[in-house]
Amino acid sequence: MKKSRKEIQTAVMLFALFQVVYFISMQLGEEIRAVHFALGILAGLAFSALLIGLLSDSVYQRLKNFKKRIHSF
Image (cartoon, rainbow, N blue to C red):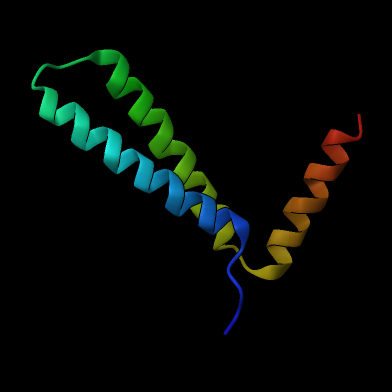
């Protein structure tokens, strides 16, 4: 079985954190805009990490090489 990438594991943890915070915020009963904003950011990060983790190997390597080139500046 192929080992999953760390981005997929990160995405699953972020989605789990999203669900916990969402559940707690729904139990409070009042609408707090800052919590919804934070949940949107958290869901976006999780979705992005999941997409990166599911890329094919060749595209994933090109993305990692691009990231290394950008960070070398």
